[in-house]
Image (cartoon, rainbow, N blue to C red; front, side, top):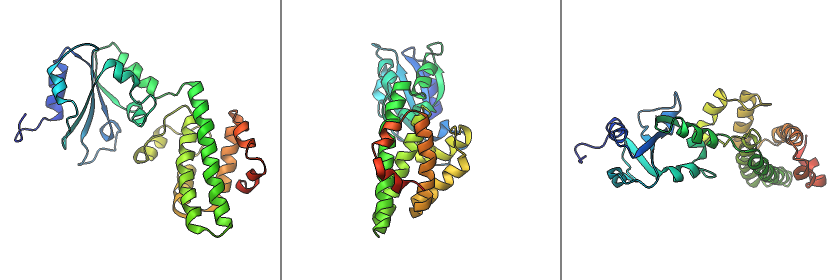
Length: 244
């Protein structure tokens, strides 16, 4: 590899596949999302090494180039990558290039794509309270003539709402770039994708209070069904300001 001959994705995959220390190759990012690749897309590749081995490939750890970014980790490190963390969604929808563990790499990715019940319930609890808080502030600020604050709080509430809805379905929230991609292919139960995305877009752009309240009514019904009454009831009479 020289300045004149940069390391390409295909060349690296061939090199890594020939190295017995490598037990897995996992491609994440836009190239793992069908239809999302552009001329600017690079290859984001996890290289998973067997624990306790040495290989010359480690010299490339942290390699970043227009075509290829590498993350080189041990199998133990890969087990916990994104658990929790920002990488979780990327790995949940990653594509396996090499799995020398008889499906072991696939099992690890599947675990990252599915929150366990206790984790999902606690995350939903926290995101629901955060969503209600921002929604309440938005509606109250709108009532008091604080237009900018109302819009900013409405935009904040959408972030928490999306975290909540995916946690309720035991899934990591997709990055904004992949939200439409994700919902087109894996819709959320109880939600019409077109309606939800239209509401998210309008509230983020305008802070539409009547729409925020209608959306909250839907969220409240789903959250109560899934056992989150305590979070909502703690708001007491303030719930009336959030409801239609």
